[in-house]
Length: 298
Ligand code: HSE
Image (cartoon, rainbow, N blue to C red; front, side, top):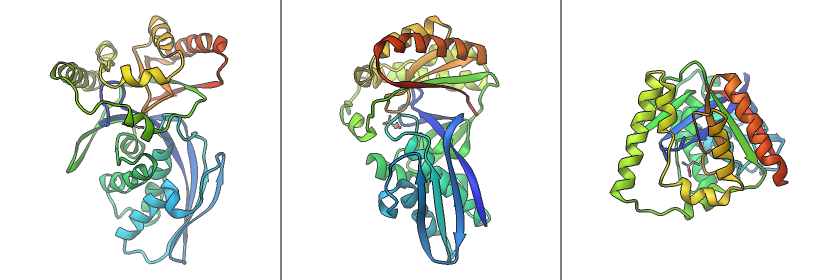
């Protein structure tokens, strides 16, 4: 009556898909143990790795878990232990990993009464607590795996997109914290038609590239003329990382979620290793702590 789950880190937006596109990483994530208990309600018994609140209504896992429990006819409860390896405010879906992991684990222990789409809806309540907005572009790939598209928020419609076999991501995380809620406030709420046209052209191109295993098309679709120019100002050496990574062979490069992490997509592990090397060389002289991960997109 207990399960240990891996809760993957995720890259939201993927340049051209602000709030609608996301992908799951297979090498970076939290671990969580969820146990059924006869007592009603949810208890977070232990959090290691990060200093986070265990109070149910202040923890995204607690909020997401309670949302599921409310909809369920199960009359017991759950205990949760979280080994938090993804730093909050890093831009790779820390809150989503906790929110998605807990509802996936609870659903499994209850015999899977809920669909993945319903699990995304429950996990979005955790995202709402973390960033004031119930965005689904991190929790959807965390639950479905691979690439997902939020085709619509109302009604919620999530599309799984196939991942080409050799697609890798590198992620560099400069150790500064950017709160999603803050980095949303600086965005403009209106865009020009011209920018819209470029963005949906790229989004269609990226989705087509993923379906057709066309790495070149994936690469040239990884553009963002709306959000990146505004948010990249908050990220040390963003332009240098981007230019050097593209020169080293990356298919494309952009801000991971709301930053400060920067991601690239690469064809094959060797290219990803090259790009990671270049990222090291770019950041070492800067004097900011950082870490770099290479992960398959899965
Ligand atoms: N789409 C969200 C944003 C993702 O960019 O604000 C946050 O992880």
